[in-house]
Length: 277
Image 1: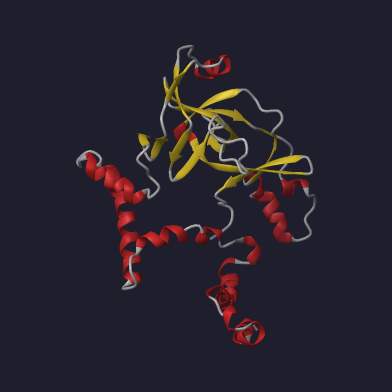
Image 2: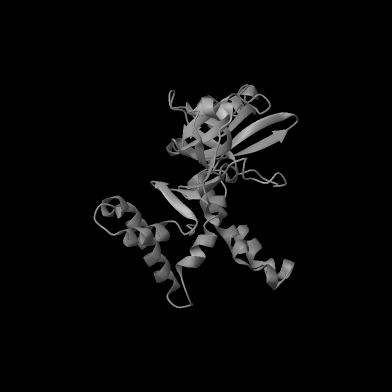
């Protein structure tokens, strides 16, 4: 049926409708057989790489070979980077970083494995709350943006109030329990220790699937028992944030998106690792 529909596209909607996206309709049946119902996954994981692919080839000749070669080089350099760190010059290591992280800029300073300060640092006198979180009353060196593992994090001290979306919310691994926690980054410190000062969100209530009650389909009952959604969409109380805590930057995992609806707030982990791409 899908093949017949695609064959009739020029007649029904004109030749301009015969695009690559329309052609993809012919593959839907195969995707469903491989991955299950379409609502269980999306194409966002592929689409987000389109911008990166543009930089992997030049001109119009042998595009396939150029793509394969450059992707292979990038992954190979990534695998051997640790071995080369002890034997190669800084110039070679900087080149590898430039290949591995295309977003690196001149105003970045390395502070760890795939972690960089973005912009200049400043020395300030900490507030009482900041001193308590850091366990130090001395002046501190701070910065406002962090580039880590290909993700740019902002602090509330840097982000404009007029911004339509927030890049200050993060997911991090708790030092004691090892569980995932969520919070808003207020500022980064470069000394006396390298951390993010985070205002932790308090999880509340149950996950959406468990709260929904008895599912009508057996497969949904399996999802409810596994609570996959609970690790992806977390109900929080944004108005009742706990005290400021210092989180080492190597424990920061990813960004999160805050969603508010009907007076309730939810933390959604990004990227979406629940869907299968």
